[in-house]
Image (cartoon, rainbow, N blue to C red):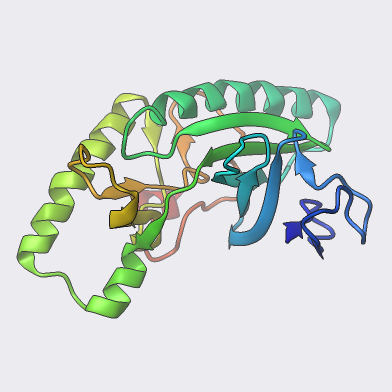
Length: 220
């Protein structure tokens, strides 16, 4: 299947179609990435599971589409500049083995997009649902893996702002290389705050998941 990226359409098309049969929008992002289905949605935008049609093996990837909150030309120009700056920062973060790699950032049809590595595995919310509460040993293992990731992120002046079980993925054993000593990956930086001046992801007074956001963020 091929999912239309037009926020006002989102029609599911056949895989071989180039233009959406419902609205006529291009189905390939940057003439390369084809969205397959929506796998996440929030106040900042949508996340699509996708495929890279340019590569012979057609590997899976993730497309993140951001909702625009500005309309006037000056604000749009500023948002574009900030998008470029923050994409560079995300590219740096993606060099960490436990953060998805950034493949591309672009603007198409006045929408901002990031294309990132697809992480195959089960998130911790799903794991908790099937296995129950973690033991003390498992919690220690979790902290030993997660705290160094957060230290790396904070060293690059980024605050994730939506750390929750759904955004921590345990890589499937079949996807792990023999040299990988870790199993957890922190995903979805869609609500991230860059401590430098930014407006890209400012979509409301509160960003993140209500059960997990910091009290000081709730207070504004």
